[in-house]
Image 1 (tube, rainbow, N blue to C red):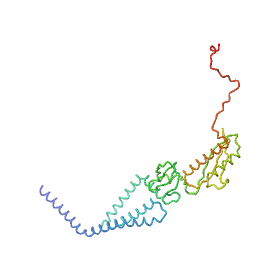
Image 2: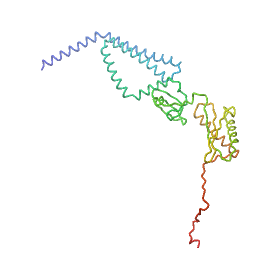
Image 3: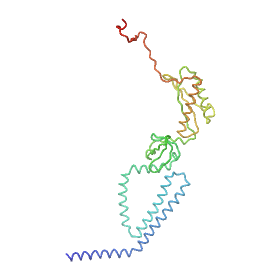
Image 4: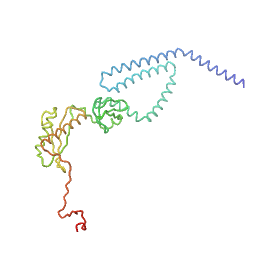
Amino acid sequence: MDKKFSEAWSKMMEKLNDWFDALILNLPNIIIAVIVFSVSLFISRYISKGVAKLLEKTKLQASMKSLLSKIASIVIVLMGLFLVLGILNLSKALNTVLAGAGVVGLAVGLALQGALANTYSGIVLSYIKHIKFGDWIESNGFEGEVIDLDLRSVTLKQPDNNLVFLPNKLVVENPIKNYSTTAQSRVILECGVGYESDLEFVRNLVKKTILENFESIEQKEDIIFLYEEFGDSSINFETRFWIKSTSALEVARAKTDAMIAVKKAFDQNDINIPFPIRTLDFPQKLKIASGKNEKDEE
């Protein structure tokens, strides 16, 4: 037993001596590798800052600028890592690592399909001109101002000051209505007047009222007035006009102001805005019971 133990001990010491000799022989390479990797980390920081400064002059989104600067930094670090492996004569280990990374990357890609799709969609949104910070958009049933756009989601600030986070994938795959692409927005006001009203007078009154309350409208011809139908209790019409705003909130405010002005004008001119009513027509032969019993009448 002692003999076996001594043999095992001697083999272990020989192995340790071999490792120590290899460490001493490769010590210059290790020192050079550490220096190269440290320099690559140092350079990557300055490269990242330099790329960020260069991209400040472009029209790219902030998220895209940050992504490109990080990619530049990672590329420098990877180049330094490859140099380190070459200095340490670990090319075979590098091939093994790359082969394993391919398998692991495939598994991770399958597990993170949704996250990767949002990241790719975020890169696409950073390039396109149809959506940018400050735009008022409508997408996926939500409406608001774009206040942030990163690699995960688009952040909208709604009129009630609530924030909505839309995944980038949904924004890319679904229609986007951008109210900020033009300098004007159209306001549509729907209403109805009684059948006894003078329709020509109503039309002129509505146009005059809107013209007097909105400075952006220069003449009556800019206001579109259309009668739509003979409704159940009113003759319905629609008025359209443009305001100098791209915000849906401003459109809603303009519509509110127009409703107040038109209602006031109608009240001053005794024009009725009827509400739905129901008329009951009883046959002439219909007898209505008095509610008294015959005995009480006697």
